[in-house]
Image 1 (spheres, one colour):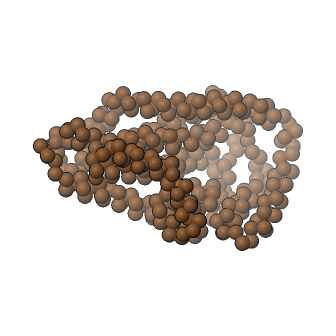
Image 2 (cartoon, helix red, strand yellow):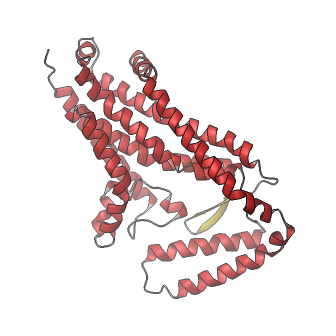
Image 3 (cartoon, rainbow, N blue to C red):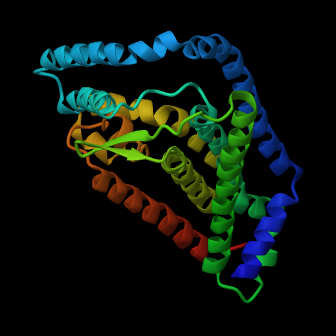
Length: 322
């Protein structure tokens, strides 16, 4: 199994296109850093003045009062919308009670903003997942794999493992590079400011680094699920173009289409894209009323098993013409 995985990784990283994809991602992070640096110069200068620091408590109290009035006016609003406002009030009240002020824009702020590049990295992971099986049929090299005394299941598992490792490499590169670039452009904070996490009605403090690692992991779930779907389409239909096109289309429209369905139908919570964004339980609100973190994890597991079963079942049964 290890030799199969090693072979797949060698084929993947011997392609110039792999390094082009990594380079494009680094370029996008660099462009984002340059834009943030230009936009943040004026704000950083203002934040360094002592006047703003003396008034943050009053400003926060004003925002809390406004949010409470907004919550009272939302008597007939859906519960998930109320939860969003309650979270905002709870976090701000915790900041006041424990004197946790907001920090200036720093390396951690940039790393958090750079997490949006995960979707961009997902495009490349989908391309790899869509072609890793279909390309073997297109080039005719699948016969060289299948004549070896190795089960088709192990071959498929090695290919999917290579896709997952490539996704992890992209995430690590994005995190490390944005951290280095953030230190160079924005510096490190003078005092460590914790991240205030709100879950199940309670506010807790988290290390900013720990929070960012968790956030990158949660935001990568959609990328992994779409790559798994692209991998399944590649194995079932032997068509990388179909796998790439459909997966990318759903990446950009799946969430929006699901939100439209969720506005009218409760069964929308069973749609894949209603569950891929687990950050909605920590920093937003669920797509459908009544959804929970455990429900979304269960649905993701069901879809993952379904995609893997279809890929394995069809790939194992398919005849290869000599």
